[in-house]
Image (tube, rainbow, N blue to C red; front, side, top):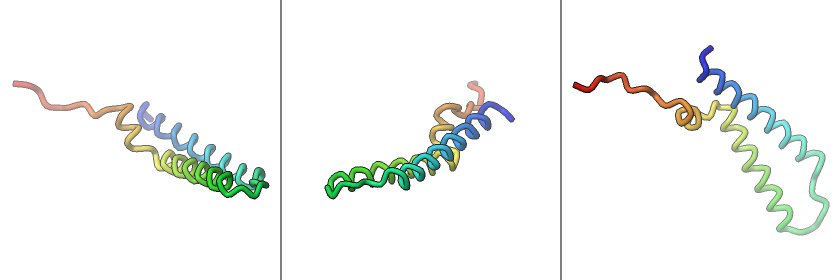
Length: 77
């Protein structure tokens, strides 16, 4: 495994752990207040967190390309 594959694996592991934390908090810390704004804020926070975690599980191709840009193979003549 090269460093790029290890980095992608690390991102996937972080994504899985993040998704596990979001799911755990969704069940343990359900909002008890009746405030609509509080429910919407918490729901929006969890949805955005889940989307970021799913992106990391996919390997975060844009982040990996940014961290390890492709080397141009052409030579200047």
